[in-house]
Length: 423
Image 1 (cartoon, helix red, strand yellow):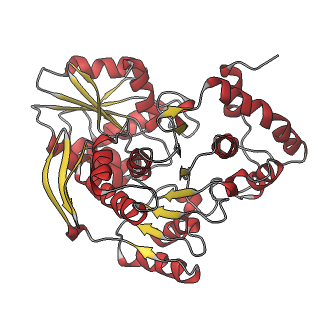
Image 2 (image 1 turned 90 degrees about the vertical axis):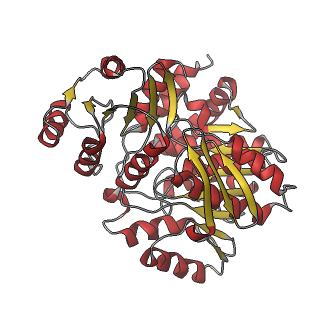
Image 3 (image 1 turned 120 degrees about the vertical axis):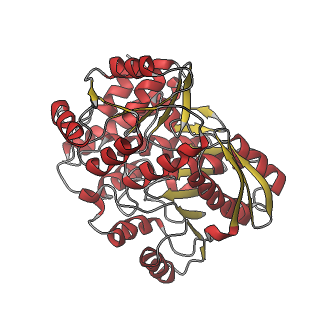
């Protein structure tokens, strides 16, 4: 009997935890069984601590204008189908079920041999096979975690590698220093493929330069000094960059302007190959959006959600608040235990008129009362409500007509509220 969509999703979500360290061995075995479809499509591979999703959505918006373009990004916000899409159409339930059923015998065979594939490895396999069979012209592939040992990193020769911002996150997996993390991200750089990099500190760039040299690749980057932001508010920004004048984006905050500049140097490089021009590129950037990044999901009162969950992302989010007009700021949040939670709570406490903390449904989450106690040590008047929907609704009752409610700290949390509001 054919699986239902719920059964197909549960089959991959309920995978046991891996018993070995991070390695590409298992995903390679799966892809070899499928005849390596990832090497039969053109790809742009994207890694980075923050900004991957927004940058990939801008590239996707432009390339979809002239090419059959696939995109793979995670985590999903509304439903799993949105992780895999072609030209703004998500993979259908029927195609998803079909691919899970076709991969299931290979997965179970590998299980029997001790190669226990994770949820993300299986989703990666589904994605590569789907894009190959759908004959995409180009696929934009976002890493899940890191780069070097990320399951997407089995592409032999990407059309380009793109690296967004680098900061301290996932240290338990990627390393304890910024240089070690940069080394992991640089793992997506392949021989003789152009590399496009968000400007970084000298010690980080040195890691990238070394990898580019040994890979005989060409490196492209830019300076933030090349950007002139002409307008910035809660509708987005207008800026000039190199030969591009009056570029509009709807994504909010200066950090999104810098992500857009990275997308522009990629698109400008490939514009002739993919039949693009400046006007089409500008039009595409204006249309690009990324749900969960300073996204308004309710208007009365105004509720904005942001998936920021590490130091750099929280700082960028707080810096972007100047784009909003409001009387009081009510912040709700939760955070995973493996994040820089003390820093995050301190920063939120500094700017919030009211602070509400809630729980998370995740294996890496705090025991709620532990997070409550940590929060109240930093902000004694913080309100703790374990039930997430009750906490969300409570923040809305605190807000007057000119106040702003902001929820942040985890994309898992943001996903729940986006779905709750039916956004």
